[in-house]
Length: 231
Image (cartoon, rainbow, N blue to C red):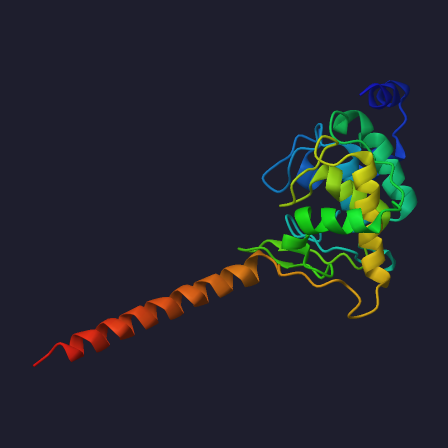
């Protein structure tokens, strides 16, 4: 909070403060305390803030409506210099949450693929295509994600995604996982190793279909046996 207080005492308005007032305060509150239209930003961490801003999910087109990878030339996504100014302004407020991660593309693609299958594939699908995860929630496609966005999402856990700290995924794990996600973006069609899992919604739908078929079969067998027993 010290930079903000010093700026107030000196009578200077930080660039990030103006950007926040114009683009964020109406939903997140003048003191970043949140409102009915947006959550509090206190202690969320710079990884969370940078993920939402750098992917164009924020500033939101409307409260609670996020559109990933919007075109900054259309005036919807903030330019990089404004994102950095806003993050500098918010840093004291969001401190205490996940920091900006340092990540490189790890060398162990097999390990990265295994981590992806265990932790990510159920929602983001085999090839990173994303899809519905129930209700109105969705897991985005990963085809445009940068390595930093992947790492920030892993550490911050935006939306319905769980947060993976270093106790769940070490720095080496994160590097290998991020490297594998990037490799999916350049993989030739059909070159990805197939997997029996296709995500929660398709698998759930198949489960319901199987149950219905089983009920119809049992009911049909029961009626057939009952008919045979009649005189």
